Length: 269
Length: 287
Image (tube, rainbow over all chains, first blue to last red; front, side):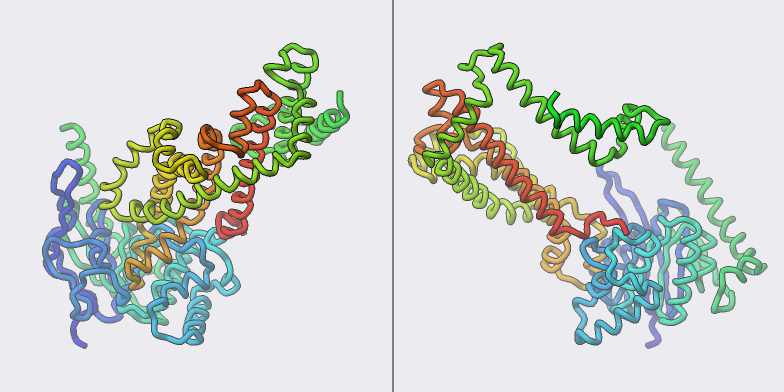
């Protein structure tokens, strides 16, 4: 198994807007993620990073290019990839336990095995005691924990995360980043993580792809050589962390200013 | 003032005393804010009493002629008479039977079609224009046609109730099904579920409370179509009794019929509301 877990080559995605105008969301993107590698995509909002992730999940059809998961071509969503969305996607009529169990519907495990594994994940995300709570009784952070467990429980080859902490407040976000690092240390798997938060990307990733503005292209790839396991407190005072952060902020800033100007000039025209 | 009223006034005033910093009207008329449930329910009860008293005063002082508006006493004795002679029970059960059958047939057809329309654009495109056209046609205009089609028996009444209910119900079910967030469907597909499984285990489960509410609302509409359904060629039923009373100017019988229909409609409404709370406990439960 020398092939990468996820390989995206020459991918382009074009949307048709209501007035038949074609919008290129993603243009000629090449990207690959190795086994157990944590990779982030950052870029200004509207740069097509979420579209790219959704294509990897099989939720968007690319016009050209190829997506491979361990040499299998992706044509539709499947259980070899787990997905966590920014919005809360728990099933409101199911409890924490039932929500996690639900994603094992297609699993061939016995009922007893399923129970063991679900309990294990509830423990891992720190929600012991909340097994029988409905999503409406959980906080935003707790709901995303369940969503993470639900995406991991069926042992996908790669976890796809679309700004999963974007809707959370700053404190909860930090706690969730630590939790994700902790979970990932225990169950190593490939992760593709989309965010617009530079700091978040540096904290979590082995490698960061920086996307430019529409049409979304890969601008640079930056390797993050910070020792693991990482702790958020230690990182804050690490000069390497700060210099990574600064480099990336500079890269993003140029594009953000450019895109703002573009929007302004389009508005005037 | 009747003792019930003074009692309620006392209750209202005691609330005022307990929070003297603000006047009671400022607190009760705060935009969108909750008020004590005791006051909420008292207000509803008081309004009923108000309407009843208005009725009593208008009729007992003969401000309105008893021919146009009979007093509560006349309606009450008409109620007792119909109850004694067994007419009321017979009418009510005949009407209830027609309504339930018309509504159940409508629902059995509306649910699958609404589900198809809500999930597949093909069915929506095919059926929505036609249903939109038919649902604006007045059910009462179908009465002569339904007699030609279904005769003068029960099936004609049930057909009218069906026409009145179905075309609205189908569109409401479609909207209920469409209310399922896209991400919920997408996340289910990442678990490897088939389209049918997503439809059955996710879309329908999510839409169920909305569908249940549609049942409640459409059954309410069926009650309002009752008089239309029993307009012609009926020999029993609450609507029939009203139409017959009109011929003999028995206004107390008309008012009694209207009250009974309203009350039975309210009861079926309450049954759906109470079962809604029992069935969908997972909705909005704050821990």
